Image 1 (tube, rainbow, N blue to C red):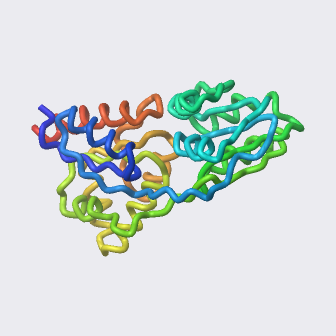
Image 2 (cartoon, one colour):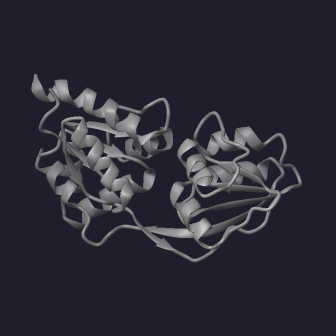
Length: 247
């Protein structure tokens, strides 16, 4: 039923992209792999704090590579995948918010962080919702950049494909993937055409912030899973796209 549904996926060119391609293959879809994020480690380790927050599996892996020891800090993960990565590296996880987002973390911690040092260790494109929210709750916030996220120089084939009407679905996993997709489209001179192509396809975003970024740029979003999980995103988008494609 779903065979030949062409799905653009923008994850970094590591095991995340390989896993995404494997998942889409298993769903009978045809992946169009176009990494929109490249990870450049800074070599920094999380600094000390009574609370230490990690917001991605990548951040956990890079922190672990530095030999980071949280000591007696309360270790917080933004969601289950980050928490799983922490446990896989031998760290205990004390806090995972009900809502896997920056706003969810603020809600989980705001009643207990007043006057306390909170370390936020993440990429250079982390949301201000987290740091500002914790500061507003009275925390003494420090942010350490563990890695930079840049757009690969050869990215953009998916933008051309979208402009040519050659995709049925797209999976955006962060606001930055949306921004980099549009930058690649602009670079190729097909920005408006690519947006038009997306609006004829099924577009999924992994959460509300990504949806808001996409819609602010004129991209219509069809699917946002209740849980910010890539597998759920992919499954729901392919399920939505397949009947449309085969009508």
